[in-house]
Length: 193
Ligand SMILES: [Fe+2]
Image (cartoon, rainbow, N blue to C red; front, side, top):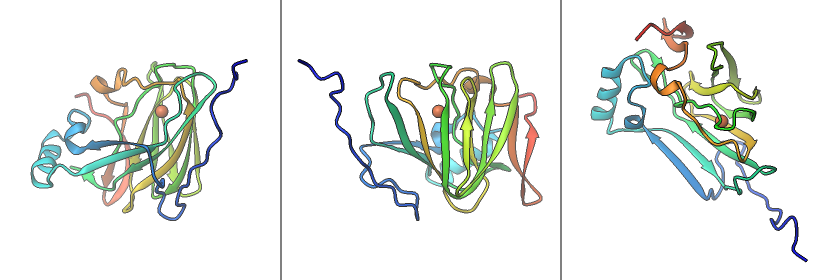
């Protein structure tokens, strides 16, 4: 008789001080050059790529599980601090390919925002800081923005079959951007670009 539940239980360690996942099995790296088209100031991004030696923008650390219904994928998301022009470093942002899947983020380090939008254009932001959880409901695209001086690190959990879909974000971006205005983060309407 075959076992209906062949996967074995396992554990993983996360350093809650630094936010690092110990011994990740998969690391996704996005460099500044992977972010072309996402920032308002394209020239500033090119300068960062040329003069800053194309620095790492963000990383996702995982111990992957099968991408099948019933499993929970989990990861550590680490977004570096910085600005492109006046715009704080951010992740590309994505919908889930399976729209009816949510995601939970628990911020372990740093500060910033989770910027979210629906396909009908509603947009909102939730603050992120150590100890704060953000719940991304089904159907909402989500992007992390780092407004602090340290890496913004979160532990994320979502249905393993969710998948990623950049959808309208790649072409249109999100309706709001997080800019540094007089030294402080401010949510501003994205100009028609
Ligand atoms: Fe997600």
